[in-house]
Amino acid sequence: MHDFIKEAARVVPSGRQLRWFDLDSYAFIHFGMNTFTNREWGTGDEKEEIFCPTDLDCDQWVKVIRDAGMKGMVLVAKHHDGFCLWDTKYTEHNVMNSPLKRDVVREAADACRRGGIRFGFYLSPWDRNSSLYGTDAYNDYFCSQLTELLTEYEDIFYVWFDNACGEGPNGKKQKYDFPRYIDLIRKYQPQAVIFNDFGPDVRWCGNEAGSARASEWAVVPQEMCRYADVQTSSGPLAEEGSLSYLYNTNANIGALSQILYSKGLAFVPSEINTSIRRGWFWHEAEEPKSVEELFRIYLASVGGNACLNLNLPPDTRGQIDARDEKRLQEFRAFLDEQFKEPLASGVTKVDGGYPTQPAYRIHLKEPGKAVRYVVLEENLSCGQRVESFQIEAASEGGNSYPFYQGTTIGHRKICVLSDPFAGQNPLTRTIDWSDVGELIVRVSAARDEVHMKNIRIY
Image (tube, rainbow, N blue to C red; front, side, top):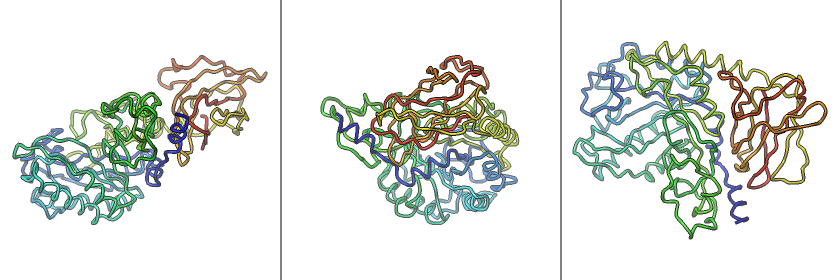
């Protein structure tokens, strides 16, 4: 068992996964037929003339995204209704046969490059318009469209797939050839990260509400992420049970109690994807989430070893709604205020004699000043290793006591010591900051020697 735990500690991300983590957040853009029919899922038989934005402006999308601090865009190039936002050669059900007659994918990709953010796309495998859906020929059709998007729009940072699989116009369902799709992406855009429920690079968090697990592991059983590269041998209990039940909605993905049964582990981190509104497409009656709701989502994603894919649906003009833009500006200002200046003057590693249980002493710039957040980051190039930790307050007289306990860290863990919206965090002990001169971050359990990348306090 000891050898397997050491192996688990050495499961590491690819270069493209590390670059993806460094983005922190990016925007999902749901824009298509449903924008004009007031639906979430189209039927596939909508007429092309329905799609008629009056003032399409992809540069406005990019400005809103960039000003909000997000670093990329994932455009829905085709949703389940099969309507394509680019000049595809493989179906007449596309934007060039609409009143707009402009390649929206081209305009969005060019706007991203002008605005200095990354561009990616979502291509729905489910197609309720194509007569080929449900036949072997559909996978050829899908690969032809995927190749167009991979080869005609320069650098792609992200390709997003889901596993929605309903009936097509012929009443049949499709068996998707994801290994073939993945091979195409690796061939034409080798640096692009691929999202899918089952890997290979990023997986679904298990919900669309913007919430996260208490412990988010990027090192997960290959039984759940079958398209990812396996980096370990089987766990010591692999022949004693099965992980066939495991899915993204499970609460303990990556926990030691589960990986011991795995036939191998892979590095597949989680993305939290949710919308700024209730729906994915724009509906005039909907209002954006509050700053507090967005902050909770931010803590769960960017602050919880995941990335945030926040949907911003353009309206019937073809622009981000002014209400959403204003809310994002308010949220950006709130984040800047919360995390504007670190309070620590230095961090010293304490020699405790145990490489899996290090402690870090944080010297406060202004002893006695209340601390609201402690931000921890592991060096993931060495693997995700921390199982649990605690934060202690140290007084001027040398006494210390624990007041916060956590589990995983990973790319980034934002520990909230006092909630800016609800006062003291009920999970933390009430602190008299007047006598606190230092904080101590103490790792209580890890799978191997801990490599901390950064510790900051605010």
